[in-house]
Length: 145
Image 1 (cartoon, one colour):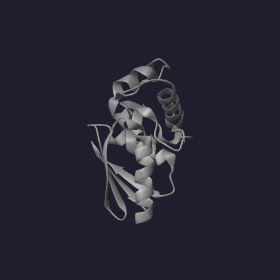
Image 2 (cartoon, rainbow, N blue to C red):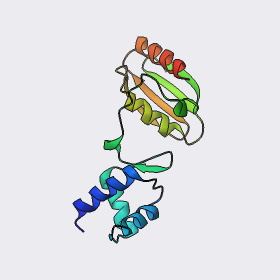
Image 3 (cartoon, rainbow, N blue to C red):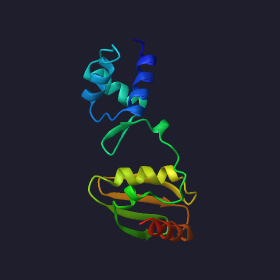
């Protein structure tokens, strides 16, 4: 199978199934008569920019833009503490291994005050455009939590 067709199939699979390991993806491809090695799957994942959200592979291009102005209950429950640490930086502490999920949700909300996020394991740095906007973002986040 051509690489382009395999990539399209991988996007379809991760969009419709819960695949959490490279082996899961290899097995799903086999169901479509596509044989792949772990190294080729690893390359495909990197080239497609697949990410893991809640332990499942997803395509960032196929992440829906959130239609609500706040985080949903699933993401809210992960947030433990929110602090403004400088005029342009907010630090959000989350439960272990959940910062990535919350940061991705914030990015999808596309609040204009937020320039971007960086997530670690349990910490998110949120860059904001001004001190006034930092306070606004914190208020909105507290409304969400």
